Length: 72
Image 1: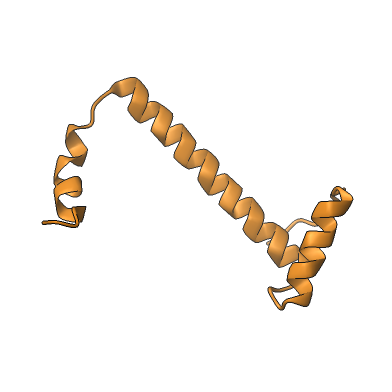
Image 2 (image 1 turned 30 degrees about the vertical axis):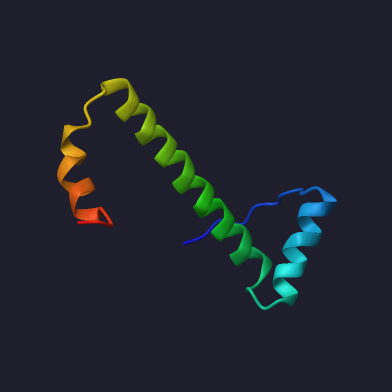
């Protein structure tokens, strides 16, 4: 299901969206949806980082860091 909304964009953002459309990145709606999804993901990651910073408990990440280390 989807909901149709009306959004006013500054001229420069609208021009950029139209550039992406011309480049074949999809219709305007898809481009705006993707941008909002990225923004949502970014905001959630910021919230997670704040929680981690406030808790100060980094021990759960030790094994992951060892696994991801390039020189391992």
